[in-house]
Structures are given as structure tokens and as C-alpha cells.
Amino acid sequence: MAQQLAGTNPVPLKIDFVSDVSCPWCVIGLKSLELALQRLDGKITTEIHFQPFELNPEMPPEGQGNDEYLEQKYGSVPEQFAKNREAIRARCAALGFDFRKRDRIYNTHDAHRLLHWAGLEGRQQALKHALFRAYFTDGEDIGAHDVLVRVASNVGLSPERAREILSSDTYAAEVRAQERFYMEHGIHGVPAIIINDRHLISGGQPVEVFESALKQIAGLD
Image 1 (cartoon, rainbow, N blue to C red):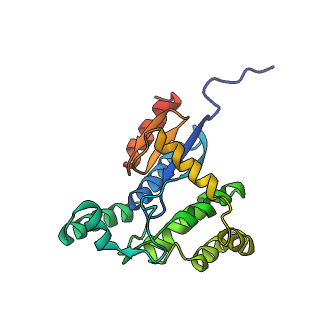
Image 2 (cartoon, one colour):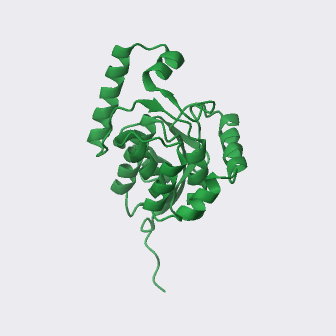
Image 3 (cartoon, rainbow, N blue to C red):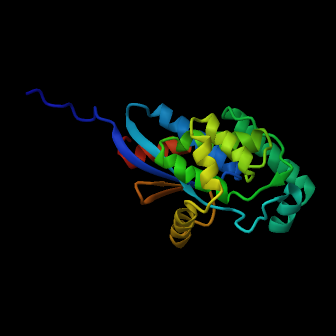
């Protein structure tokens, strides 16, 4: 029997991507991570599991004005808002994502419930991207059930089932439990990318940072 040459099999990695759908740096982190994985195609095999984190768990259903919220939370001024938005827009553009100005921030709990369900249906990554586009590109209310049902349907999920979930508290306990788990393990900001349950990469890092870290963790250096 011929022997398998060492190093020819891709290295399996477990990736948990802890994030919120209203977090612009999470868009940058995800796009950068995916590009890094593309560069390592054939060397690493993985599936990204999206874990919930709510930046604004007390946000009312109608949301809040974006600048008002940022001023209250961070004490920033409008000039700083504009500077930060431009930096994010430029980073997103370099990664192929169309980032536009939004007027409001919304409660994302229901979006996370749908993402939990989408994970069971094998459509989680597609829904995550669709929710990012709905909010950051199209400026839609990602707390509104009609918007969430349409976005879910557009990625191949059942609109009827999506509406059933949203009209109940289905998966609410699971989402809250996962949020508590990561908070209790020291995750207080996102994105937080956890490799093999032990290696943490924080923030919207450049593609090269993700690529180097993944290679090191996989023993490819």
C-alpha cells in the first residue's frame, strides 16, 4: 500500500466568529478572514460558526439615531463620526463591500435568533452576509420582521418558518445562553474570532494578519 505523503491533507480548524450584525468592524473581520482562508485553500479546511453578541441589547424596537447613540455611548463628536465612517468605508471598499451611511441603529436579537436557525439549516454564512448587506449597504431596519423574513427567504430559507420563529420566542434561550457563555469567557468586544476553542484573534484585522495567524495555528509555517 502506498504511503500518504506528509502534509498533503488540509489541516482542519474550528472557527467561532463572535459578532453582531450591527458591527461594521465585524464586516471587515469576516471579509478579511474569508480572504485569508481563500489564500490558504487546500491547506486548511474549516467551517465558520457564527456566535451571537449584542452590542446594544437594550435597544428599543424602533432603534435610535446613529449619531445620537454614538455620542451617548462613546462621547464622540460629529466630526469624529465622519472620520471613523470614512476609515471603515475605505477598509470595506478594499475588501469588496459597499459600506454606506446609516441613519439608525436597531435591536439585533431577532436577527441572531434567525442566524441560530440558519446554522441548523446550513445557511448561516449566507444569512450573515445578507444581513450585513441589508443593514450596512441598504440601510434597512434589521430588527423589522418583514425585513428579516425577506432576507432569510433570499438566501434559501423558508419565509413561513422564519415568520413562525420571529412571532415566538424560538431560539431566544439558545441565543442568550451563547451570549452569556462568551461574555463569561472574557469576550466583551467584537469581532472575536476563536480558533480551536483556544486561540483568539480580536478586531477587524487585515487579511495578512489572519493568514499568518491561521498558518501558525495550523502548523503551516
